[in-house]
Amino acid sequence: FLAWNALKPGAFSQNKPGFPRFPYKKETVLTDSLSLLFPGFTSAAQCQIPMRLLFETDSRSCSPGEKPISVPSVRAIIVSYGRVAMVRNAKDDYYRFPGGEIRSGETNISALAGRLREETGLIVSPGTETEYGCVVCCSRSETGGILLREVFYYICRTEPYRVPVRADSAPSRESLSLCFVSPVTAAEVNRLCFSSAETRMMLGVENRVLEILVQDGYL
Image (tube, rainbow, N blue to C red; front, side, top):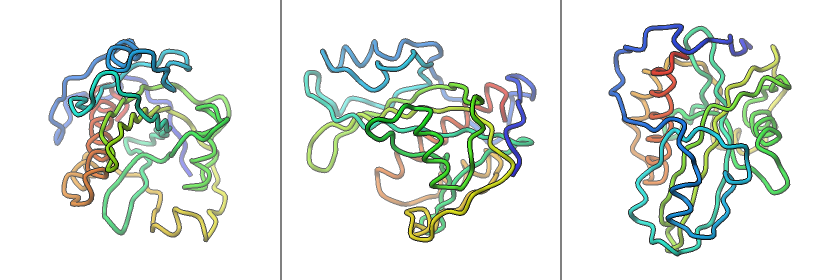
């Protein structure tokens, strides 16, 4: 498998067709808005070395003072020759970055390696993980509680081989497959996905991250 080819920001033109420009915040202190919305709450992000906040989703459904349920996760950004590694869901027909939840006792880096291996069979090359940014998603769950999803994105390289993905694993059961696609193709497919509200929110986040990668010159 082709690993990330160490593209530098600005290596390509940032005026890419197919992407509307979204305003986003750079070098924002992630904990500022969270501490205002949830006084006294310590999030997963507050336990990390400060990471660039890419953007936040609309938090108007969340009431100040309520205690949220933190759901931290990691995503891998693997770029090769202008294409990006994405996991395709064949059932619902959409693309997302490979990755998954950060389990109890895991660091961001160990979770990145673990979820990437479990989901795609790719092996992260140790020491190549580079922080890209974090997205904070605040929403109300079906049971009425507040879910605070913190998604940590890392640019990384992978080894030139894959290990088998277990046949009884979640990716196999859910008809997930790894592919390298252009950001415009992934974004267009995601915009046409008619799935659950939660999935549509997730795809909106993934599309915005793709657009930021294009603006930063990685794609």
